[in-house]
Length: 338
Image 1 (tube, rainbow, N blue to C red):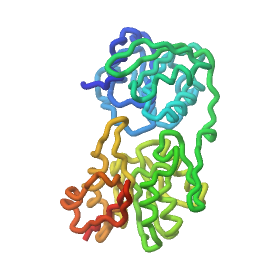
Image 2 (cartoon, rainbow, N blue to C red):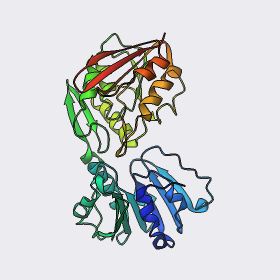
Image 3 (cartoon, helix red, strand yellow):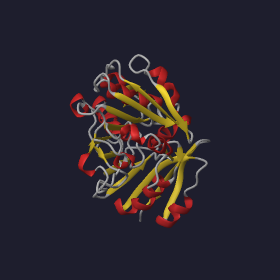
Image 4 (tube, rainbow, N blue to C red):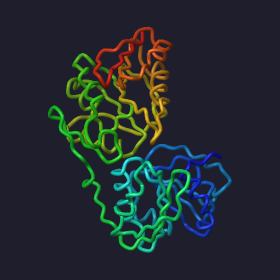
């Protein structure tokens, strides 16, 4: 089993956790929670990650909780929190404020993250609630520990950020793409939408719901399905739809994992990062598998950075494709299924 640098750092202190009731949360990228010995373990996920729960280690005391937020009821039987710091500081604050509003005073807190992620700022961020100190740093990661001395206050609505674009209200939670501002690439893709686009449409990686809201504004008769693998994105998209009196299906799916029908049109502004690493696998999977989910004469339309070229992949999977918009920074591909 290959563990991340963060998990390797926790493993160096595994004896600490043998007699703990551990609640894992945050940016968990491997199966350490299954393998770390403890009295009992719970894993909180707000992004789709498939754990192999058939592992013998901890199987009789392991539970997985998938939701954006936790509650006092969920964490009441745990005395230790291990939190994996994400790349977004605003997302970390959002998640930690929720977590520390639920745990009992006296809970042991462990926070681990890569140095490049800004995790060192956690000491200052949480100083009113937890006195954190560095337990160890190694392999470009750092592990902090402390005791919860005061519970935080948490209200979900306080964390929504609202952007306004062409009379649309775009609602976004921390950690969702477009939280700081509406992405220029998304705007470029939205500018290509018109009332000629209709039928059944799939928005892959819907994020804040900006693309679908923009399309529905121009084509009210379209039937939109919006998917994302982050619970915060699902909630953001639903809030965007509600704020603009628009309707669409919104649910969790890891690309096409929960998609079982075909569409006239697929749109996407796909990520090319996995955490802090460049990763083109998502856009490749979107392109290659789109032919299975497009109706006859269906279209795939997506935006990418201008410096990236997907002609080879498109040429292998589509008979006709072209670039319909381009700026110095972004370009919009259109691929047609004959």
